[in-house]
Length: 443
Image (cartoon, rainbow, N blue to C red):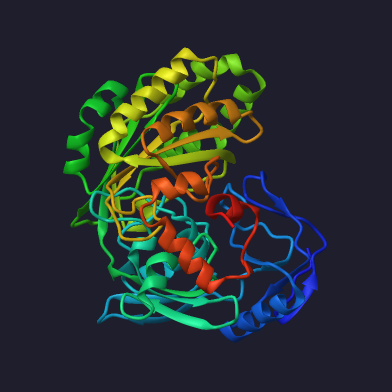
């Protein structure tokens, strides 16, 4: 694909595809700005040329939030740390910086984010724009750790946003799904690096659901995976500790990274896709291959792990109090159906936050993520799961597959009208619009 650096642009010669391969776009041209001034100039030029604009990160969203037929903005040159304020406990980073590079750079400085998701391939702007999150009793999503951001709006204006400066934009742009402008820099709250001790332990579905409230209350970060077609789960508890580092041994790392997540898991899913009848048996073997283990390391090495097996995903946030009932209904649905599900179901939590369109906005939330191996028909499973999630006031992850529209979101989010009114003010001509935003935000 031909790309350009600076404010100059090049015609696009090939389609852009997301990580999962389910979204394709053919932009008219691309630009790779190297500064905020060049980004502003690119937006003004696109507006003059009648082209819609979308920035794109690493394509880890399963939705078409970044798809455009106009100008595609690539962030590869807007990377790196602008500055660290140790007294304030913040780091300001360029929007195109991959999370993995930010995590490594912070660690070298003796610093860390408080919480993070389970992968770190995304750019920081892409991660916050779709609401990337991990799991936490008290600490929330990556967006909730933002103290300020820099946003370039449709007319090329550069806005600095925080609780004190343009606070109404700050409330929304921390999770803006690309509708308000192009983020050029983000300031995160950070803290001195610390150790987390992870305790992973198999547990029955009945036990983990009956003890869920206690497990959530007793651990800073609790999550679990349920293996469909079985009564088995794998639980993970991450809590701060004094250290020292004691990373996983080679055997346990192989089991976790290869059986659950990557190499052998790829083979298992390929077999299941070819012969669906084998899936329940494989699930039982996979769930029993896991054993308890405990290890200690700095946060990003505990929170994140490699994910090489490609899949399709739907994730909904439900009120935390509704988690157990929702999950039991999902399990019953799978057992009564002819579905064959080879991927575990992931369950995480988040405290309430004050971000306008955050899936945890104004309420404690629990997340249920369902997956299917790429190339396997997923529609029947996701449709049935979505019916259960929406019956429990679920809010879909903005970057994962769902069928909801603006009418649904207007009911699901008390501040939805606040967001759309701000969009009308910042982007009245819909420079940043596309078909996905038209569906989820309306015209």
